[in-house]
Each structure stands twice: as C-alpha cells, then as structure tokens.
Length: 355
Figure: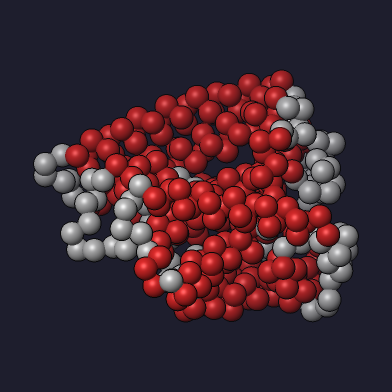
C-alpha cells in the first residue's frame, strides 16, 4: 500500500499557497484509523440492536458503564472528522482530472447519492443511522467550503467544534463542525503529517498524545464519578464533561495510533491489517452489521440478549466475521460492494471493480 510521504509537508505547514496536496495511492494510515473508528461505532450500534432494553435496565451495570464512559462518544468524532478529510482528498484528486466546476458538481453528487443510502438504512435497518445526517451536513456545510480559502474553513471547523461541545456536549450534531474541521485540516496536509516519519513531526505527535490522553482520562474519571453520585448533576453539565472527554480521547487515539504507524516505518503491522480491511470497506460493513442483526432478529426472535456480558462477545464475533469476509472480497475486488455502487452513482459511470 503506497503512502504519501513524498509530499512536502514543510511547505504546507508554512502556509504557502501550494494548492491541492498531491495524492499518491491510498493513505494506509487513514484506512486503519477508519477501521478503528468503525469498530467503536459498531459496538454502540450493536448494543442498541442486540440488547433488549427494558424500563428496569440497570444503567450502572459494568458493561453499560464501560460502553458509556469508554466507547460512547470516543469514536464517532474520528469517523466524522475522517469524512471531511476524505472529502477533501477526493476533491483535490478530482481537480487534477477535470475542471474545478465539474469537480464541485461531482462532490455534490457524492453527498447527494449518500442520502438515499442513509435513508434506506434509517428506515429498514437501524433507527440510529448517521449516514443520512452526514449527507445533509455535507451538502449544507462542506459544499460551501469548496468555495472558501482553507484557512477560514479550518478555523471555523475548530472553533465551531469547541463551541458545539460546550453548548451541546456529546451530541450527534458535533459531526457537523468536525466534518468541516477535517475538510480544512486535510488542506493543510494532515493526512501526510499523520504518516510522516520525520523526527520533529513524531515529537509533536507525542506531545499531543500526552496532553490529550491526560485530559481525556481525567475528564472520563470525572464523568464516571458524576454518574456514580447520588444526585446527578444537571444533564447539560454531564453531557459537556462527557463530550470533552470523548473529544480529547479521540485526539489521543488518532495521534497515538499515528505514532505506532510511524514507529513501523509507515508500513503498518500485522495487527493493523484487520483494521485496514475494515477501513477500506467501512460503508459496506457499517450497513452489513445492522442487516445481519435484523435478519437474525427476524429468523430467531429471541436473538436479543438479556445477559449484558454476552453483548461485547457477540459484537466481537460479528466484527471477526466481517473482517474475514472483507479480506476475501478485497482479494478479488478493489472496493467494497456498497463503496463501488456509491462510486458509480457519483461518477455516473460503471467503475471497474475487479482487480
């Protein structure tokens, strides 16, 4: 898998108007990161689908508490941010093949064709679908960002994210500002920086990991203590603490995994391969997980779990099956089936899928 280490990061960092960053092949680390984020999201989604919620559910149960303070809100920010990053990478590469006007229309089609996919998932498979929201946000916010300079886009994304977390805490609406932040950050060379093996970049990443991990762990402990308190604080206070805990944890995950990637010389490891496979077929696996559970629920009505200890076991089992199936698929095809259909709909042509 080819990386983009040859891009001149120093020129991007100094703010020179170098235009779209050259893209060479795929960014292997982004695939791994997307796969890690997908795993966290599916843990939460499958909890909603597999666990039989009741009015008397024990919210202090260790499994539910673990989900609430370790997984919830820690991986969705990464997924939303990567959506914006990927949007810029596609737009910048498209600009080199066609006029700017045509490239912008292609991006509009890409986001518009994601909408029916999300709506089908929302009404048929999973009521907590995020694809519909992502499509609408992209059409409303990312498309206008195509016409703006990269500096204001990044500033609006970062400031908007901090304000949104302060006002709404761990809300799905945070995806809007994170998407814009990712779109702006990609223009300043973030994908290249995450794979850079330069010593100075690695030192900066290590500092960010230490600071964000400390903040994330501290706020997570505070969040757990507040949930254990006899009298819960105001919901907005708890949401705000949990939201910032998730944000800092997400930053620590991204930069921490980036350090591991750099330590391996930008080639990844055997342990990163499953996440890379999931990342390359993220859309297909996101939808397939809900579809598998819905089929099980219809064929075996008693599939929903009442014993919470089986919930993570069942989730890991589904993820393992998805990794194995995706690995076999990618041996023969370039894209996941839904990714391929989305690409064809975006380009208005049949894209070759076989390797």
